[in-house]
Length: 61
Image (cartoon, rainbow, N blue to C red; front, side):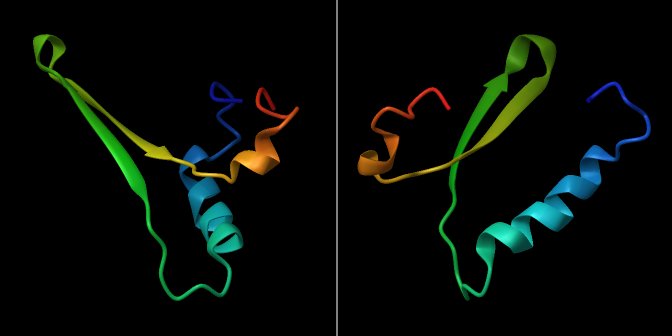
């Protein structure tokens, strides 16, 4: 999917975020920022938090 030039990866968040946020007026986002000074790059991750009861028997999904 990432190598398919017909798919605009940048467009995905424009559709996915409103779907996930819905009618909420505010959200909290957990972020992890890691700098890799040796190669001049950084990684920024957004983390999803879920209720542990929903993970039972579905953790790897």
